[in-house]
Image (cartoon, rainbow, N blue to C red; front, side, top):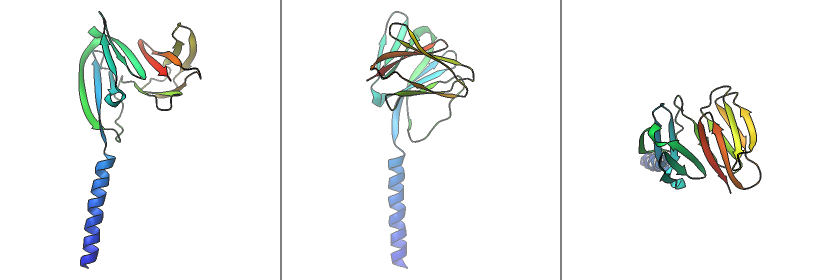
Length: 158
């Protein structure tokens, strides 16, 4: 009986350790806009933040430019990356994991998404039929612009 209790205790300790490994945390940079929209950037992707007279620019594999006066608040948050948080109203999230497709979350049904090259040529226009849309990038490496309403983000395909 003591053997069973010891094995059970060891298993419990092992499972608790595994849970700690699975609950990996990451730090995000969060921008809260005056409109209520929020944008988050994973710090482990090393976003570079620069400013000009009117804009705050966040460069990463997916980069964004915001009018500085429209930013209400920005802060850092540590949260579990294994936990999927619900998307807030007016929040748009981007996932660029496979270097070929950009998943966009938080869209409104009927919302238009446009993809441009750096010359301003419209390469693709898609209409969201749900809250999620996947945009396939061209095969050629380069910098592309995704435009959703008045939000524009730069995507770097390597």
